[in-house]
Amino acid sequence: MREANSFDIFLLILLALIWGSSFFNIKIATYSYEPITLALVRVIFASAPLILLCKIKNIKIEAFSKDWKKYSIIGLCNIAIPFTLIAIGTSKINSYLAAMLMSTTPLSGTILAHFFTRDEKINKYKVFGILVGFSGILFLFLDKIIINENNYIFALITILGSTFYSIGGILTLQIKNKGNENVTTSTTIWSLIFLLPMAIILEKPWLATPTIESTLSLLYLGVVATGLAWLIRFRILSVNGLVFQTQVAYLIPIFGVFFGYFLMNEVITWRVLVSLIIIITGIYIVKKNNKGME
Image (tube, rainbow, N blue to C red; front, top):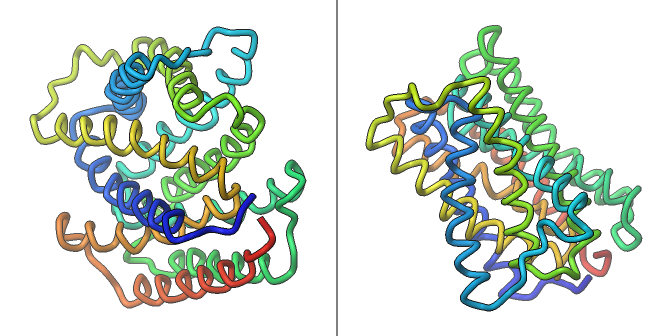
């Protein structure tokens, strides 16, 4: 893995902006759509431009090749499960809180990278930086206005969803030589295969009466926050490594709080702001000690 240059950092910030804006859109979409249906429709919207892109660029989609098991497992862990869990969590907590809870991804990502990759080994400085960032998340649980007995389970579900992103990232490294567009499209197709029967059996989506606002949010989630974002993510993962890529989770809360406050009128307490400062400090420590280690 190479040291990040200016363009790599730009892509990381762009990815954080896209994903940071996705949480208030998820919140709006949950007003009309059940979690699995939300994830399903999001993947459907994402699949169309991805498949079209592969056709235009004459890229073979290998979803059902001899490596189908790898694509299917990644589709399950990287898309189907986290999309559903995060939708469940976000339906009951503030959208910016869901974004902030995604900052747990670097902790699980670094631990997994240490055991399952050769060139992203853990060291005490990296652990310290990630724990500092994670302590900001723990501090949020002291704020009873934001997290209480009525929604803490949904906060934990959101954290679990973010952990599956790290698992999916590790698995994706095993097939990074298969091509950006192919991997993104193939895993998305498999996530669709998993989500479709689950939505039909468990939620009966044809009975839903969605609003235009929720549907527009869902369209954005599919095309931009899924299709485009996963292409950017895979590029970062392949060039710069898992630990660098998971730093996007430290930037997501900044955008998430911004959008939640200004667009959703969500309450921001002083503990939220302190948590942001702690998280940003963690970013600095991790970034400073990643040089030459990825």
